[in-house]
Length: 68
Image (cartoon, rainbow, N blue to C red; front, top):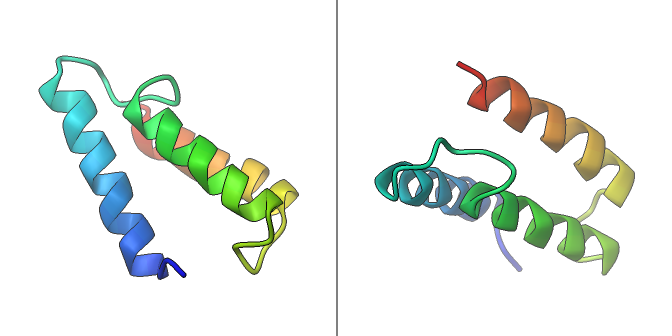
């Protein structure tokens, strides 16, 4: 099971990879793949929260963070 701190490190890595490739981090790049993976884990019961919480709360937090 992935710990929350591991998820944050994976997200930081995704943001760094998007930035290094010349992209602005967004839900369409590596950050988007991280988010999709998180949604998949929630759908399979791998997280202790539901897909609706991940899709709304995490998406809003990411969008707010990624906006300049």
